[in-house]
Length: 609
Image 1: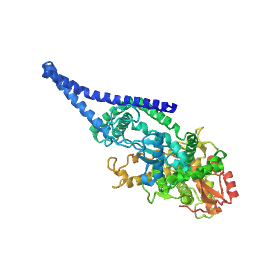
Image 2: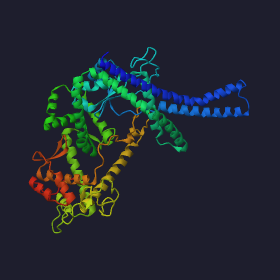
Image 3: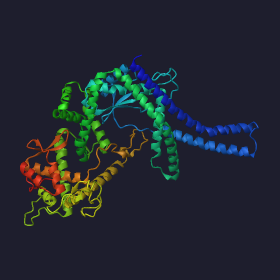
């Protein structure tokens, strides 16, 4: 036997040992539930044979019998909840075999090389990760097998549990080549061997059932009696989970070790190179979501080709970074997305799911939630975002009573201008560093008064600082944005409450989602913007609108940095520090100099949405 085989066998044996420990805890819980019933049987048998007679024994028989009935009823109820509670299932995009026959063929060939069962199905997740997921419901799955000697080699009298579903990160399919994807999936697919072992499968079902029971019991209940019952079920489930936690953790470690050892013999050299691509894909995916997708989601648009965008972003990275020069040469090889019959439709489905998971968007496209292609992104997202934020900025200035021009004798420009913003934020008398800009949420309901006594304006040495005018404007923008988000959330809730909407269907009905839509977004990308960031973004948006309308600049998309302003075809990369100088110190000189250099006329009105 090779060293790899010995390592895999050791990990498998450790996993099976821990699985048996979990099942013993289940057996002990059953024994505890049956103990009062056993005592009742003994007392009844003793009375019938004339051994336990007398008033005291009769009282004991009735007391223990009543206790046994209560314990059995409680145990049956808890067992029913554990058995029927639906375990959490990751939201994914299912891939049917007829839509990806080459992908299924590659995975089956890989399973044959590893000598493990093939996954029962394949699904995609909009994230840079891959795993196996058991989606057999305990109430409807195969009967629990018993015993076993070897990992993954059940006896003739036992049924093998259904193979788990292989979940693949969608960015991997678009960025990786076919050989790299196979090498990355090898240790994941190897995990189907341990999953087929009856003891490990039974232990996993038991732990998942306990976890689901805790979640079900935590749901809001009607009436004190229902809450008391749910609290009791949750207490028992948590008690059993605490007893199983260490054994379950070590079991999964053993399974992972056995799978990794088994996969060592498959494309070992390529796996080292492929792991580098995993890290690169994760970096590109994270940057694409936070810099490119998030601004679109905030506008009610979702990019329909996020995975294709990963390729563009990483290709751009390889062009800029000398360390990534070798990655561009890989693009001549066959991409893994060619294993799909219609990669565009799959990318669109994964992109919509990503918007739901990371931003909490609706499940279906609609008038206020429509897809956007990459070629439309600059006009449909970047330009609209700038003009929306510029319009909000001027509404807050109106609420603050700021005049369109400081010179009473000057004619009204007849529209919103950048000069109005510059004049208001310019404060020669303000000492820099006197007041910090409030964090997001400090003044959600304080209005636009800008009173320095408002909480959140205290001097703090470690906080970003600004003038009183910038602080008041930041507070107004914070309150305005919070109000808009609140109104949008109410409108979304009203839409999903209609009969027939997915969120109103309930978790138990056929075809209902297996995860809670009310908890979205499950993985928020970034915390809410601080007041300093919010004000800076709005002022930059106004500058960009003025540049587009008065200097012929154009909105653009930078694959690594998101929305960009293109002046004479070049990206304006030095705008942010000049804007920060204005809002934090009240000094407009750096920004005005840049405007003159770029040919932007701040006194000219701009078009807003």
